Length: 373
Image (tube, rainbow, N blue to C red; front, side):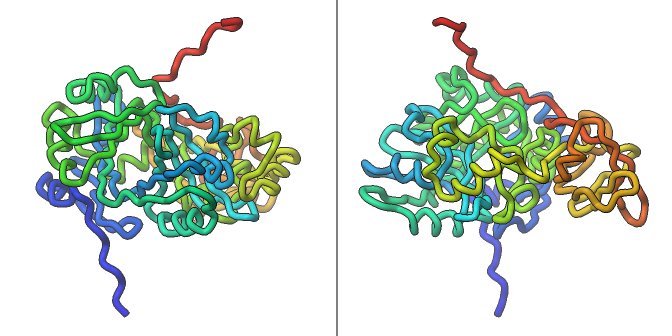
């Protein structure tokens, strides 16, 4: 039996025309890099980069019972999610393990969801299995998804959709660009300000070409991974899987207060129990001595103790000019400042536990209302 051929996004031909180095990722043919991983990373940190993330699965929940279904599937308070607002959340199995992490938004007559490409079929099957009442799942396979990221992203999107510049982090709106309907959400996976633009596949190439002509540099998976490690963001398959409780992975902040009190979502018993009792392991950042990056799977020890953890992601940080990593460690070793050692190629590499993110986020956060107002 021959392996399935990787799928192409609507922009694959454009990537090749721009000289991208293409790789297979999660069943898709995607650009690893264009001008170079560090150069693209720096462009996102200082100006604007454009990522093709059309491999991500986009779908919608429609029908009068869509909110009730979201309440059962997710640990957010979907009933309190106002139109034009989006939330980062996760979906659990009955044991409290993470099926996938995702973003859900209220578009008025539908709930719009983006989940990971590698988990798409698992997520869709799980949602379909648990749908009840007047609710339908619509897969939006005809749409592309572009991520415009960096401090100049707002100025670039304003040229095409001026109203989008007024959005705050995790706000969204529907607009038109060049007579094509788009959905724009102010979010991303880099730690920088930016926007994810869902567009009809037939309009995606022209949209990407316009953003590049206006100053966004095409960027690939390599820069995207460096950026998210610096930003301390989880990657499914590294920090998250179906054996990992989201509380251990540091995602308790995304569980709404109402769901903490009432539960009612799939996996709630295991998740809420860990919230109450604490986790025996925690996700932490690592600052690494020397210049050799730590890679996924590297074992960590503390003094003469046996292994106390394992690296989940690592790389060279161009911002900090040193290697950084993300790791799961036993709670006793999770305090910032704890000295650990990683074994890499039979060499012991010294590292220190630090708080995440490694590089501060630059999201445009909505100002808080003064107390009493």
